[in-house]
Length: 337
Image (cartoon, rainbow, N blue to C red; front, side, top):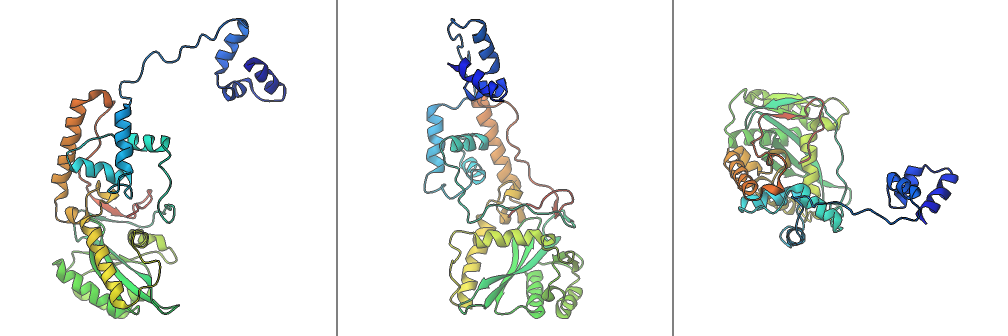
């Protein structure tokens, strides 16, 4: 029957290989059948099972974890490090994703799909408080067509939000006061920090530039008409606005907006496992605690590999701390927050 169907498809213009594969056999198998049309199907399948194949129990554990109330709103790339912090190894990220694909658990849960970003100019940070990036984003106010304005300063080395405020207007004066307050809070010395921003009026206003000069901060600006030159802040704003709990309706007051942003910054700095930092929090990175955390994860993985070597075909996951960080590196897309 299969040989007859393949012949019919070939007569209509299909290749014999494609027709055979569509019928569920290889073209070599179909050729062997033609040599002995009255014979039996001699295929016996694979002679062995891969040693690192997940057991039914292990697959069930993965499904149970990713569908649990604690983890169902987290990505696999966050789940695996959290389990390692609890001294627990279940499976690799690729195994999690493979099982989720097979079980139909890979529906996209965000409000929008991730977007790729371009590669503008760059600055290199070798430690905290060397390169900051700042920007302003809109938060809807109760009156239609009006907004509150979130001013935010991000340390690109640690991804920590080092300064923020919410105002009812955009102004160079508000930006200057935030820059001065952030420098005091982080004990920044003159000529220590580069502050990168786009070309908006508050960023290049006379008050802001004079304040930066007085504080000894080097100003850096995006290329005109290229918003992705400040991708670090843009990515953070996307994280903010697609964070579960972000109001779908306008903020009822300026105070309500400030309270929500304060809670977000506390979560982002203290709980969010950042993909660009080997999944440690910005606070841990900023304060130098990331090395001990990553060393602990490496130890867990080394122990897991030693106890179940059949599950590993290469080295364990890379848990070495991130080194220098480049703002908008040349030749590579900017990372999401």
